[in-house]
Image (cartoon, rainbow, N blue to C red; front, top):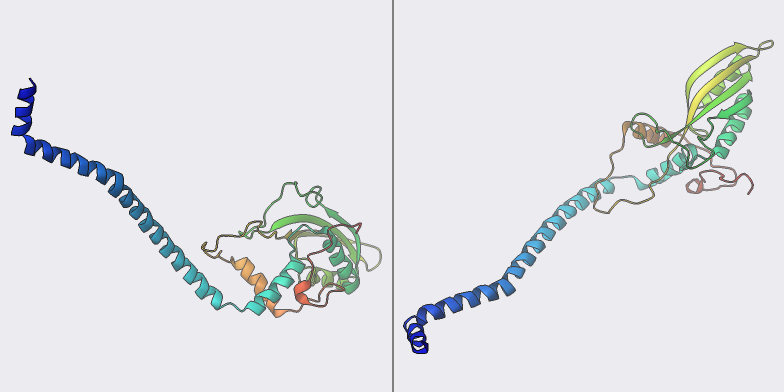
Length: 243
C-alpha cells in the first residue's frame, strides 16, 4: 500500500505541489495582504472625511474673515445687559427702578409667574419665532399721569434695561389725572451653550429676530452698569441678593 501511495505521489507530484503552493499563497495572502487592504480602505475613508472637514473649515474661515469683530464684541456686551444668560431677576428690578425714575410713574406692584425665576429646575418656555431665548412671564401695575405712562410704555423696550415685550395692557382711571395700567409682558434670558460645538461643525444660522436685535443694538449706546467702566465688562446681573 505504501508503494502504491508513493507511485501516486510521483505520478501526480506536479499537481500536488501546485495545490500546496496555491494553498500556501492563499493562506499567506489572507494573513498579510487582506489586512493591508482593510487598512487601506479605512485610510481612504478617513482621508475623504478629512477632505470634507477641511472644506467646512475653509467655508467657516471665509465667513468669519468678513465679520467685524469689534462690532460683535460691543453687541455681545450690550446683549448680555438686556438679555442675560440667566433669569437674573435682580436686573429686572433694577430696570423697573430706573424706568420709574426716568418716566415719573409709580410702579405699585410687580409680579412674576411662580417658579419661572425662583428655581433653575422649573419648567421653561421658549420664545416664539425660533429664537433660543427663554421667557420670564411678568405682570406690572403702574400709576401716573398719561404722559408719564406713555413714556413708560415706550421705554420698556428701548434697550435701556432688560428686554421686555408687552402682551396686554388694561387701563383704569385713578384719582384726579392719575391713571392706572395693568401690564402683562415677558422678559427673556438667553443661556449660552454649555458645550462648544466641534471646530468642523457648520456655523449656526442666525435667525431674523436675532439679526434685528443685533442691528438695533449696533445703533444705540447703552450705559454700562454702575461701577463698570468698560462695555465689555458689563455683568449679566447680580445673582445673590445677600452678597
